[in-house]
Amino acid sequence: MHQRVKVAAAFVAGSLLAGGGAIAATSGEQVTACVDSKTRTMKLAPKSGKCPTGYTRLAWGITGPQGPAGTTTTVSAFDATALSRQLLPSVVTVSCDFPDGSGTGSGFFTSFASRANDGNSYLITNNHVVEDATKITIELDDGTELPGQVVGTDPTYDIAVVLVQHPGLPTVTLGDSAHIVIGAPVLAIGSPLGLNGSVSTGIVSGLNRPVSTTGTHVDTFINAVQTDAAINPGNSGGPLIDANGSVIGVNAAIATLDTSGQQSGSIGLGFAIPIKQAYRIAGDLASTATILNGTVIVKGKSTRPLLGVTFEDLQTGEGAKVASVTPGGAADLAGITAGVIVHKIDSRIVKDMLTAVVTIGAYDPGATVTITADLPAGGTKTFTVTLGSGQSN
Image (cartoon, rainbow, N blue to C red; front, side, top):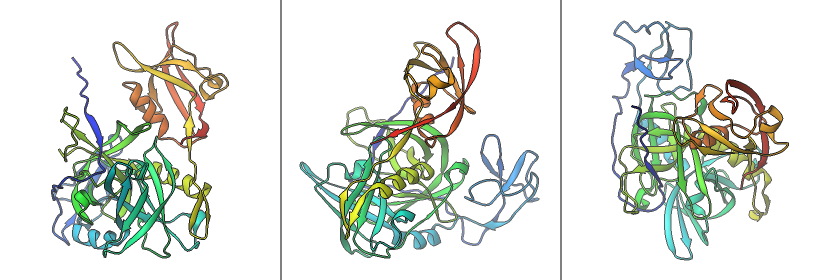
């Protein structure tokens, strides 16, 4: 009998003492990694250095297969020391005052074409880090403190952009989260307990994990990257980094076994928002904001893809039932009706309503997807749907 295991995910803004693990190999050690193109799992090549049949060569942390099956490459092993030195200047502590107290989170500087050379620096963090803040202070790696302003937030995706009125602060390099592989080493940087620039290491433990967290005003849905790198309260908004020093995710939540409602620390199940999705949202927020002389006049808005349905879970079995269809929406135009049971979106198996919601939410507005569903009258049909676009926040 298949048993579905559920975990409670909790936001990780706040302040609890961090733990940490390490899988860093000795600097300069040479390895050859191979990836299965179907399962996206990774393994080391045998001593011969040749990848098995069905695997392609992969440099540690590189964003996707790098050559034909059976070929090899030799690359430097994961070097946490070098990565930390490279990334720490771009990662900050985000300290916030709220009407009922204070809290800390993390963030990292990045660049937006829409805001190039405007004399300001911009960072990505989580919405739940800055939501309802009355004052934001950004602490740089060297201890310098600067005031921050919210450029825009998206509670549904749990992404926020913050402005610092200071030019030229160091930015991160963005990776390609669409080609992350399970087993690849990663590094997380953040500020658990306000401990600026804390580093932990681990691996990519899973992909496309449907995670929902409850926020102050709206629930968040994440099609998450799972990692066992230690992520704790205060790490929220910090980067998850691959072996090339590229950001592949925004650390956002941890699973917890605590049913008392108290926030707990890492149990080796951390979740990050894929950077492809996070940066699209952040780019919307940055480009639509009105900023004058370093002051945010009008906050930015973001968009989300629209299927035009509401889902509900089945009482038995797996799948997501379409409870209602928006007239004239994307699903309606594709011929989807209420009562169909969705089992697959493109190649992803849909086990429940949450999986369906986060899978659709991970696409860009206007993307074309295939949806395989059981029909109310019997039989199965595959629909081709062009997703609509709507305001997210």
